Image (cartoon, rainbow, N blue to C red):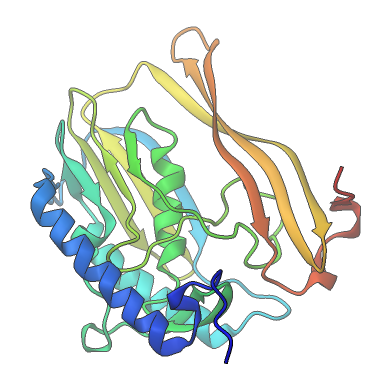
Length: 279
């Protein structure tokens, strides 16, 4: 058999992928130990007084081509993870780490098979669907001055949009423990992250001791789908805008994602009026 020099070890077969994954986990444990990051550890049932931003998202997506069982399992996984996160206080110079807070997702801890992306394919996997939670947290943190210190993105087109397009509706990747989501409290006051579920929705709040001087907004520009070879991609640019709280004037606009996401759902479900030819 000829060896393809361009093929990664992890792409050879599932066993090689599992070996690579365990290697990544071990390396990350070592890095975490050596870096001595000041992690947020304290939780409080009492809410901090000021609401910075709140983000809600549906727990279960329904539609053509969507496996409802995996969606229901995803909701179970998110509820379990929320119990670990809800109420956590991030003091000045402390870092929130998704995996340091949530811990390992295993069957023994009650986690079920949800959707995961492995080698560019959507498959069932234990703890799957937590990207929905990390992404909802990410969208919340983007509406604040907090410093995002680790972010990994996957496709922002896992399923057809439900209703009006929401920038960053998905796309924040987490995989225990080497693909983490982290942010640092680079302000002079405490902030608090709340995450909980009702019957149908996931809710995330960021709270603080006092108001910040700016308010923030996410804006998506140039959104469309385009065909490249046999694949389709969602393409757009997503910006974070900062406005003076008292003046309402735009103070700063920065690009947070140059979006080029492979469409992971049935291409026939892409709205025809949103497809443009690649220039």
